[in-house]
Length: 82
Length: 547
Image (cartoon, rainbow over all chains, first blue to last red; front, side, top):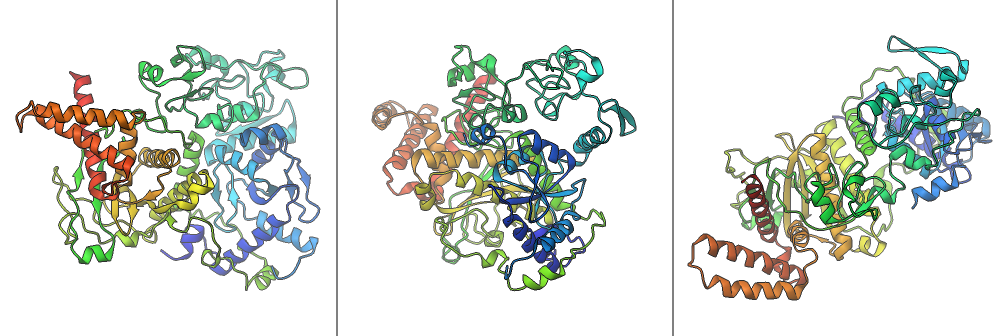
């Protein structure tokens, strides 16, 4: 079992160096979130709809061009934090 | 990062990362932590192997339909059709296809309708793949048919999104006992309104008992910590103790069907939701078989590679005082490869049923499965720990860790290198993992209730003893002990009555030792004795129930 598998799962043919670069890139992109968005995730169309259905903004981040869902329903946030 | 990137560079980078999504993940999006917590309840929550980012494809089979519906609805609006698994489906919501306000016999009315139980067009206490009418016809309980106005909004369901997604009123409701929508003295996964005979919204211990227990809760169906443990052994991992040949008390071996503890305390700690369990299982499956050959393009972020070559991104580079340095949730399994079971020699001891104890605990590097299990359990333990008050968290000392053994069992190892460890063995299945997590949750709950944060060889015994005598005041214990001392003089030594009285006295003395911190409560022998007594009590209860 290669060391890389302990970090990213089984070998997918991508080098450790490139995986590290991707991880760093992911952090950089996540840092560009605004209004409380602090993470980046891979999302399917279904996930996007779900995020919108709970009040996510669905606007475009001006720096990254990615959709952002910071504006989740306040009541929802309150409930989740009880 | 050593320097800022331009928006154009960022967008190119984001697109490159987005292209690495799999199983239908087509976009990279910004989200906040609340949203991630919610998504974890219903989606995969795994890490993309190429980017390391979270992904929520939600499982191949279940999500594909959802995706197909969502995409077709977007493309075609109402009145369209799409194919899934060889069958044709309408893109209509229920009110659109039926033309009425009642949706109970129709299709899903919204994205949330897919998660609120009760089948398509309605809600209910449990999930159902057919229509809401079929759900009710087959005896489904709770919930109601969704009523929808001309704008597509539901008019008769004022539940929060959280409640519709999880069935629980809010996050606190998931761990306050009593199942969905209730609180109570014990736990269950499901709806147990019928158990609340007093109608006060709280399922008291007596009500739960009369109901036959709340099924599937934090403590299994037995309302008891460690109820699914198959085997328990004490061992030494400390080299000093090992070389000194320090003997550890007899390893205990128990039938896998036996319940170790009687019904006991009413600790309150969160447990995993069913969705979290599912996500965990998916995570485990995923890490174990990730050669999907999906042909995702390799990372093409040359500018970033160059700029990040000197970044500290490995775990070993993370430094700082996190307040709980004396606690470990993932002690390296290598520490346990050679340990001393009973005779100071390191040889495994044969058990009552002629099975040798698992001698070798797999290290996380041995297989993807062992790595995934250890990491997954470690994450769960850290999550539980993070919910403790800070002052308790800072005082944590010792190790909890979960490993695979070479005979394919789950081993929960609790203790520290100084006093030794107690290893509890569980079935290496999802149910076994659930039991490990439930028992761990109860241990954290014990810590919070008692402020006992020293995880040593006696810790599991203290949890057991505390649970057994929960609610009994120390003066009462002392009075009982004095009474037993008088009573035992009436019996001849060696008789069943004598043995029972002696065992009862030992049990009470251990609990008093725990409460007074006499010193014996930190030893492995304390844990073994406490667990042994509890098992005997459970066995008696089982025998009495079957008589």
